[in-house]
Length: 138
Image 1 (cartoon, rainbow, N blue to C red):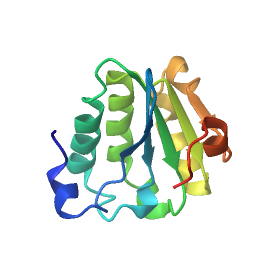
Image 2: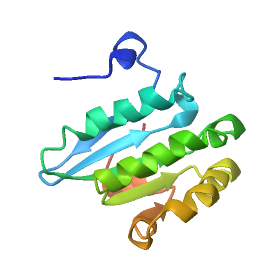
Image 3: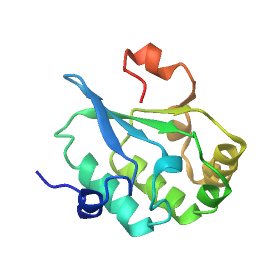
């Protein structure tokens, strides 16, 4: 199975991993605040594209954890734009944002103009997402 070569060498490089799967849905988790290569635009987008290409027709949900998301992350606008492209390309079902911070809101405000109304309606801000989904908190 294909995997991110950067993360194979340095597992903390990009934060995007499958944490749960059902018959119809795959749940991915990301926490940019924990990623050592938070500014690796090409690597992050390639990593996510590689993981999402394994969906095999299943729907997917993205849990974005804002813990540790600071100014340096919010300034990486190119990564945000690239991720919006992936969300559209792979048609995300839901996006759950947990541990929201002022810097998460800065990124959201910047990207808001790029989001369709359909994509905006997929975003749920909820720190209780793990309990709701019955997933063990990372």
